[in-house]
Length: 295
Ligand SMILES: Nc1ncnc2c1ncn2[C@@H]1O[C@H](COP(=O)(O)OP(=O)(O)OP(=O)(O)O)[C@@H](O)[C@H]1O
Ligand SMILES: NC(=O)c1ccc[n+]([C@@H]2O[C@H](COP(=O)(O)O)[C@@H](O)[C@H]2O)c1
Image 1 (cartoon, helix red, strand yellow):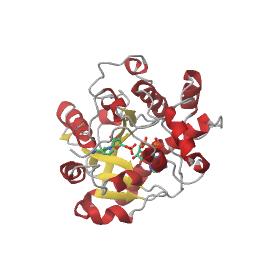
Image 2 (cartoon, rainbow, N blue to C red):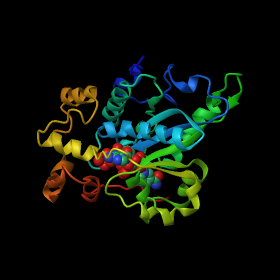
Image 3 (cartoon, rainbow, N blue to C red):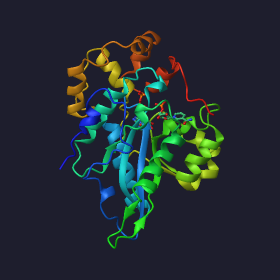
């Protein structure tokens, strides 16, 4: 049965989030297959708004693990970034968390979840966010349990699009220590994304290659939140690009009708590309006021 949104999350304001959002139906609460290495996938991002592609990323990674590894994915989390990230087009954390919650409610088995912890903090680097999941799942929850009752640690892995990993070889965006922490200690599944050059990162991140799993998109899907926002601004339909409940939420709350960012993008001419190629880089270039500079 689909999990219901946590009423404490759906309500406003949200000042004291639970440490880890864990629906009772989550596979994390059920015994893991004894011989497999249990993994939890964590996708960090804006999710403004969540799209079907964001949800598909998890499915693609699970298919990949089934076919190519002996891992078992026992859970997946979307972790919407804090409002302090101040990326253009970033709606309030409350709306973004609510929309992600609605999006994951479409699934049947409850393994995909939304953790609002990061969203309601000051900006947290991705390395810190992964530590949060590691601590909550392995230390507080005690990992997963096998059918014989044995505790197993869960490996936390970052799930990201290839545009994000491309930024890892750009100077000033990620610190070397954080990269070593994220890619050395945890590891990542990288979903191919149209328009981002994969060769760019392979060299720079070669020493962590054993922990980087590249997942090709067998059906190309270039939906992005940027394009969804542009469509809304132009009065175009966004139906079937994102879950129907999220479309309804956007309509009911009148979201993304008028944001300064869209105006910047329109002025820069990026709207011409709304139907083709990635609008993402252009919007970022249009002026994020703060960046998660390497620390
Ligand atoms: N079409 C896509 N293909 C592959 N990965 C994607 C795609 N869209 C989003 N992602 C990935 O989803 C994660 C969450 O990203 P985010 O919410 O910032 O998405 P976005 O759609 O790129 O947003 P925006 O358009 O606002 O920049 C990131 O790792 C990003 O690389
Ligand atoms: N140094 C860092 O930890 C760092 C750098 C860049 C992006 N990120 C994260 O990547 C995610 C996606 O960012 P963009 O939407 O800007 O691609 C966000 O969750 C953000 O916090 C982290």
